[in-house]
Length: 380
Image (cartoon, rainbow, N blue to C red):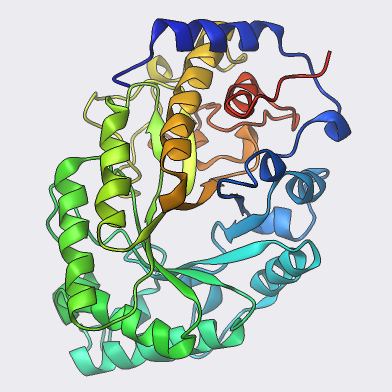
């Protein structure tokens, strides 16, 4: 399980070279292929939710049985001004999911990114008191979770609170409230909807130090008698990371040891080179000028690279299937390559290919590699 094995690469290469373009109605549905294992979800952008991208919602309805809002449920989108909520896009997504019997995950109630400055500041622009910030957090969570109670069945309550070394991330939440802000967020969310599934969500949780930091944090929430149900492992991977898939398996097992289910919440596998071998993850504070050296596939994805990606996806799903009893959901962070955030991070303007469907909404070699684990092959 330590890297791409030769047999896995050869199989994926065969799929990459031979898989035909398949009509939508003839493409097997991921939600059906993995029905006995875990839910298969996808993140939707606002323009997709509102039907402004032809063909996407039809593909989503056929392929997936879970949806997550990419941005429209984040604080800056729902409540850009204190007390002034914009529900339109979030309502539309929840309605779409209900019409197609899809489980909704709300993303995210608390994050240091995409949160308006007013949340942390008083009228003079100074940091608010602990009491005022807790009140704003409570008001926001009760308004959002309360609106969608019994319709949104799981929530990413806290997003990205831990550094890669396992320490707490230095954010306004941490500086004003201290480490207990995580426990407080889960407490408030459980009050707002006691039956919802509540998750902690973060990237690079295959790193042992970061995994250990999250284990410690979840134990602290549990020790306070506060409800937490699972951990979201974001799954922003690449052709070279995780270096050892056993690290992913170990993380799922570690969270299961706490009684917590794992979900792969934001899965994509980038094919582009990273500026540094140590630079991976999903830290939006990283923002680099475009360098064409790191943008080599502007004219299309070469077959050999598609094969490497297919092999990597296969490895990930091998781990997930081996631990299916402890994995609740696998959600792809985007419907197709053209929509992926990886085209703009960490360098805006690159052309990446991180998902299972290409820019024409056709299944890629990676798609067939994944469903092939369940004995499903392209129709002749």
